[in-house]
Length: 130
Image 1 (cartoon, one colour):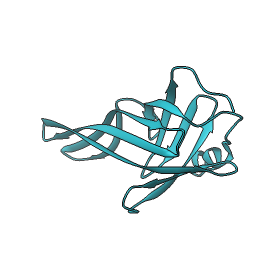
Image 2 (tube, one colour):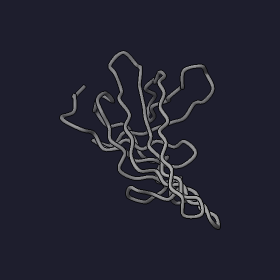
Image 3 (tube, helix red, strand yellow):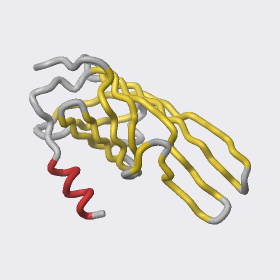
Image 4 (tube, one colour):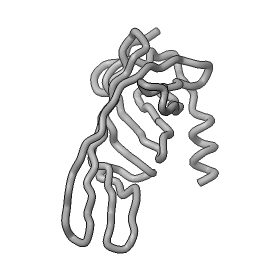
């Protein structure tokens, strides 16, 4: 766990604009679908998601989940929006309503976010250079 955190902290924003569409490819160190919570008779998986970063400093996000409880499967999606700012080596995201804030790092076309679990997104389409 410490190695993952150190690796995450060392990621830096390269000379790349942090705008565009990023598709979720991994969560909690696993390719999708990724098990993010599990106990006897219950499993929660992240099955998809995306985040769109606009040039005006706003973002929208969505994440799809699958829940299996005693063999019964349900799905849900969460989504939201907010603002982001670019720091020295970080992107700082703040959800609308001020309820939560989290950090991310952009390495080429890979955006890594640390929320309750680490999520890795891959840029969709060409990137903008700064």
